[in-house]
Length: 217
Image 1 (cartoon, rainbow, N blue to C red):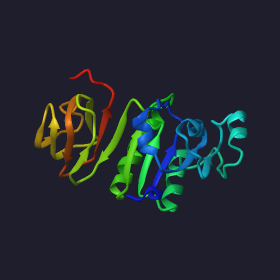
Image 2: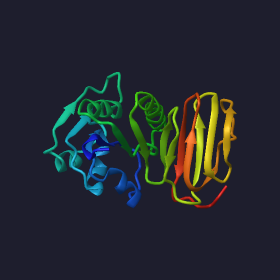
Image 3: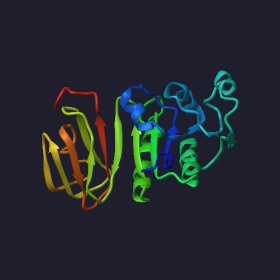
Image 4: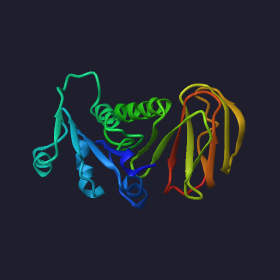
């Protein structure tokens, strides 16, 4: 995929930066959502737009990035700052979205909203990955995909409803066209044994991985 079709969406959650995170955003264009601008310098990114109500950006952060164009919104609005940032990226031609700082922090409601948003974006045909550095998540679509996870790393498939025909290979606990009821724990704590191949016939789910957790299951 062309680099200019990949956008890093900088969100306000916690982030541990390592080579894997840097690889995800390398060459990407960037849009910051409010306090997510705090990650820009460490990632080596200069966002082309900064959106939000700016209630999470302190004076020092605002001054440090005073040259970045801003798109302000009132605090009372129907969309989160992160959702606004994503839609702005899509308007600019994004096909791949790397949502940085999406999975951790003080606001579990925002983290859940990012996960659900990722599933909805996947259904619209966008390639999405969410990262906090310690965890990564990708929405599963109704097609086979191969995920590059370190050998021995932990991952789970999180079902957002009943799943039909879930298959997993390249893993410690493989599945072949399994039907998974909603809220079942069968797909929690698997282990990557190499490239992980996932396919799903129907349902909504995310694969949530801990790339640096090699403790096994």
